[in-house]
Length: 427
Image (cartoon, rainbow, N blue to C red; front, side, top):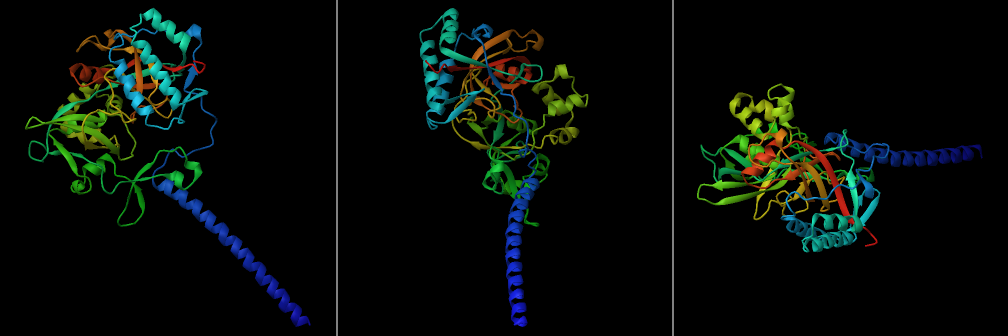
């Protein structure tokens, strides 16, 4: 009897151990799954993982009627209708229920369409400045960007450059413009955990030796790989390394080929590495005075210091890839951007495709010193974004493709304000 009881006790203890083991095994697998996610995120250099932070301030605040600006358009509303049409193309492509945040308020795509169509219809009546201001005050709700640290917005410009090039490499065209690499893939961490919802996708590669996932190559690593063209097919070849760098900065451009053909290059993707401004590096190194900094100044410095080009360009780890196509240039909502009517903002903060009003400064002509640029106010559409355009205090204005655009985009550093307009709901 005693032996039977001992056997029964041993059986119960064995069963309890087995249950404990199963629980530990389940817990171990759960922890292992969590660790794998964290390792993956850490391995890929995800420095912007979600943290428990206090709620951020809304980037847009509603403007009281008494604080509304004077809605005067410096360019007499020229080409504004065409830019509105491009945003309408975008809004009619997305689900009508898709929402867009304006501060504490939310509007769906259907309402955004009504807002733009109503505004465009009124423009076609060719209103006076007085009538336009009255119409906006009676029909639209206006929101203002909270801006940066100084409560204002820093405006810069970008344009569509044209550079000489070739479809084949040669002594005169040694610098390849790469297509998206075959070994670059995107990782959506939200597929692993809801904690990563809202984070941008990571650009990665698999290390063939360690068989581990790694961040994609930096600018320096790409330039130092003699066989990189086997991973990323060159779309065209450029005569100048500086041209290629500025093509990346602008995000699109034209290449003038020897036979007179013009190839249009569009943004295809990026290596996912951090963008760092070479202009800031040159200022910090006391190579170019801050007040004289411009794209033209950067080009001149690089041209006269070829022995230091690696040092300067490699401070920017980001690298852009291109594809050839027709039309454009295209913004981040895949519509054609309109000169001096399309802006690039941080689209995590501001409504894509939305109607906006900016107060900034623009040159009256090529060569006008920055300090003499007259103030300008314009209606624009939020149709693009950029690697350096982050936060509520930054706007990039698309300037076009001509010499004025080149000069303006190269020198534009102006303070101002950014407003967004949307049809009042009861209208």
